[in-house]
Length: 508
Image (cartoon, rainbow, N blue to C red; front, side):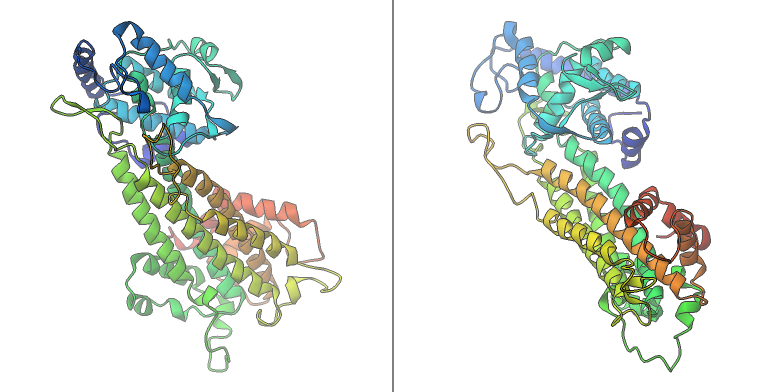
């Protein structure tokens, strides 16, 4: 249900990823109808009002007569639907649509209730406008992506129907019994002036990263165990000496995951000559914890943005129509870039742990590259190459988009956020982190098998067993790519974390 208040992150995920239908509350319909009266009154005023009776951007100085205003709004949508490149994912477009609908429902944009209803109807019918990769500068919001959606609302352009088929928007709307909208004063502008694309991708990324950080604790625990590391460094009193909340949560996860490990206990005695574990083992909670704290900040920014009515101009609560700069994507762009840094660093530490497993000088008695017959077999040598290549790409993706700006609209829009670009590269980074952690899990599982007859902890053993349902254990070299892909699928689905949580309960 979309009302005058903010939709929740959970609601965005349900609609975007799981196809939940959408309804608009009566209060929101009333708020939109009431505000619309103010727009209609200003439309009759001989004094030009931006977005209602003027052109747009650098063309805002021209007063548009009433006879041309329907054409003005239609032309705005058509001209701004200038995206190019590959199609954007369905979940991103659905998130974008719901968030734009949420802003319309506040009553602060001046759009009619029937315009908002078409958005709700499209979402409920599973109709997804085609939006393209390139076109948004993140200011004035995600103009081109939002314009492609608005184009479908007026019955033009191309969409994917509920079956994923590419069809003309007019045909899809007709088949679903949805009448296209004829836009009136200000409505075209209200449909394209928002941060909805970048915000939608931020919410989706936060959901994914939250799960991946739990997986990072699982794979780190498997590596600590397989590399004969100690769990003593994760003790609560040691972590409390540096009271970052994310660090405490990650360390507590590690303690629970390693509890009951015969492998860890086998060297927890005075005869052990290892003084300290490498940073990639010993400092895993510090990195994964800082990542959690960064994620918490990003989620706070997302919650503020969810509570926002982003449009220009807006209708204030006392009935004024005012221009503003709330469409600038800087707040969202910054945290999108921040998360890309986090993703790269968590992946980098994971890759370092994997590399330790393969080096006889550092893996404490395991065969070179975990190979069955080293020299004849290469084991996991090239799995680490694949992981390293992804990590290198993640470092490039961590370069911030939000420090860039390129002027547009004849210098009227002379500083832009590039938030959409930050969001697009974060999505690629999230996929990369999933793959890196999957390779670590696959390699660590092989190492745990090679530590037999010592048994891993019940939790890490359960993760290893889940992998073994899809990938055979140590042996002569096999075609490795399908095994890596199977591990990636398990990582992405949450199956690896779920198998650990079945033993120790919900990880934090």
